[in-house]
Image: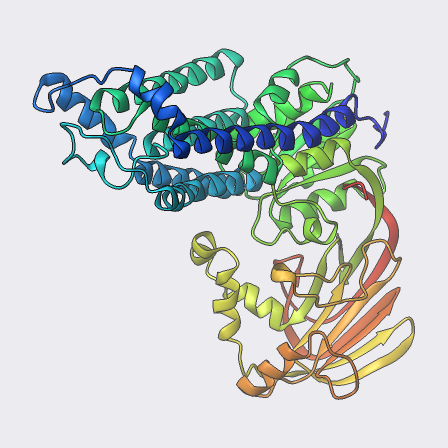
Length: 532
């Protein structure tokens, strides 16, 4: 089996450099052109040399074509287009296309910016038979309809690129939206509510907003995406994609995006393996190893990631993490982006990093994990979390379950670390972590690092009701004997309790126990992480 090197990027660096130079240049040219055009409008030069030389249409608003023109102007209304942009941004965010979502949100902000722009210039509209139309509200420059439709053109192209559909489908979509821009310009001219110079100014303003979004967010331009269609040399590498169907949103889209990324990197078509309700990934990882793959991508929640990583530990086959769950804690701690495209980039072109695995033992049963496991409060929260509420509000479901645990009855714990007793007293929570950062940037174990060869123990003493719970939260970043949180680090820990309490492993409830042990296995798992 040939392990792909982290240095295999086959043309990626030139593309990235081209993008960094290309996008700001295009934005600067668009902005300068719009500024020059606006100066020509405000000086009156364009009025004399353009507007006065193009005859008005003289269309009757009550005619058949006049009614069609006014109806068409409604669907190109700037604020309607802004609503479309917001919907597309939300959809992209839900599909874990974070950069695309941010770009669409910036595009939507272009409409309020257009409104401010026209208030500042305040150019009167020309006399028209459509003066009482919605399209004739406000000042004329720049044309809001052209600006909005141009922004829409960019949004549709960006979404089309992100969906990785066929080249022919993309061309048809581009042609259709380009036709919409031309039809909008003709509609504006036919109604006579703006001048030709207002129409061109609206188009230029839309280009400025589109290129700004492209540059700020850093999405590859249309030109570069088309260039990326050139098939690179076959590396001979093949990956398996193990995915949890309950976590992956719109699988067909996900499959197209992964396949596109693989082909662009010169990899062979991936092996697709779906997890099952009674097997979150163990058998799937074994199947992938039997197929002699070079890399395993795992897309799912923390439980799927843990199970697949446990099987890959010690095999020499690296894992690439595509965040698809609620927590995605291992990915967050390793700096893997939550954006799907960026995570794929890391999986294919990042560096291989050996990280530790923790072996957890309860009675005669042992299993491995990569994030954290513990007894008490965290496990009880997992137990009380409503799965239906979790699907609806994601991490907010844990907050709801956590509120129910305020004032939970403590239990007694004796903690022995590397043969030395380090704690003996009441606690509501005892955690053993390989990493320490939770959602929302909460650093539960600040000293923890996935590759430090140590496990990290957190003991939370009795909370004492709501006031105690608040005191415990405020102590997250504080040390010292007065803190209700005690932290230790070592290689092996044994914890004995005065009674059986619930325990969890990487977010999966595991039952109840009155005793457990955990031991770190340094550098056992290979993970693709971002380049520093």
